[in-house]
Image (cartoon, rainbow, N blue to C red; front, top):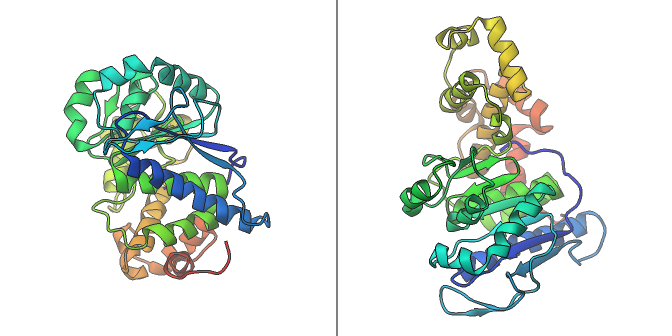
Length: 335
């Protein structure tokens, strides 16, 4: 995952509750951000009170009946916020969307205002129904691939990804990938130390069947250069291979000079830096979720020289690979 420097501090996280929602996913999101708030407050010397609100919201501010028939109270109706979480539900979406059209208006308004919007599994349907994902990449839970593709043909459904991002719109296929998404957002707003602390406390024993999505790259695909998009996809699949950019350019009908110019114009990155980021972000996931040696990880992401890999890793993260790993392996007494 490509993590930007912490942006403006969070003020409010809104977690949408509707009839049929999975109550466990509501509270999972609330717990992640509540823990982040406690750690962030401690780090900033603000005491133990979280410095931002994490609210359960419903379309009308009234309690909802969850999937398991538990009556769930909420904190507020739909209001301005910095992050919106759309948890999964088990209900007829047509019925829900007709009953609550204000949700769609709220999502459009908040997206235009710069709010980060995150859908998990069927929660992604709300984003697509609002038209926010038209022409953009998205994913959802595997059981709903066909229904989603038929209902939203303008959305680029990627069935191979567990997490996608595009234009401040994030999709998670299921529970584990949603956890990875929350960690990314916590790092975005609260910094790396807080995010790594939350990851240690909650995700230490999670075994993934996938490498967490490389969040932060999706925004670099919002361009119309089809050949460069194809090359970006190729790089994601072959980042560990040995190749020359001259050969990649030639295979796509470009001179190396034209390729370099077009790639940077489309993505904002030079090809080599883009490739290095892909490798380093993959290495970060392997360091935090496996016990593989640094040498093995270096080789798996495309570097035969572990010393060179370690220097490059430090350039990108300001930490050595071992320091990065220790932040996940050991508890701390601070933030």
